[in-house]
Image (cartoon, rainbow, N blue to C red; front, side, top):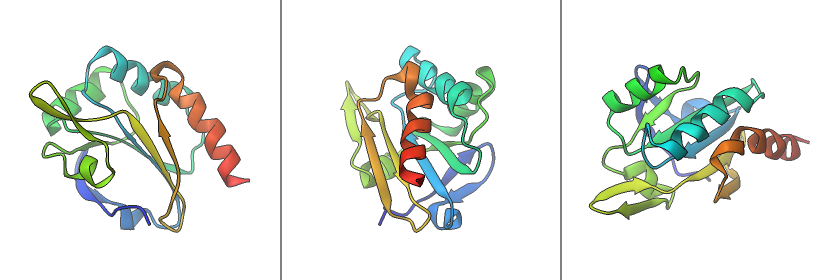
Amino acid sequence: MAPPWDVLAVPGGRVCLADQRGKWVVLYFFPKADTPGCTAQAASVRDDFQIEDVALFGASTDFPDSLLVFRSTYALTFPLLSDPRGELAARYGVLTWFGPHRVARRATFIIDPEGRIARVLHGVQPQTHGAELNDVLEELRT
């Protein structure tokens, strides 16, 4: 089973994995909002990810205010999860240090409708991540 979560989402409110039961879920972690690689990744997911009946979330150790600006600046169409203490990233095994800061390593977890991790993607290319998600989900759902 996928590790459970109940975290603050930007925009507004808490989101928990249990509420997503019955849907495919994409949870992608990124290190830092408004950095070149993370911006390219978010733009690729925004522009290229085409599967509409999937719950899609980006997550980082950024505070909500940073994520709100990031989401607004780049017109992101999916919620961003704020994990400033790194608890969510730690549960998924992607918490690491970058200098003096704890950040999430770039990784994506695809969770099936029963709440099981169906696939983990490490080392994704930020510029093509959205298209890669389309391919992986099409494969998993057939």
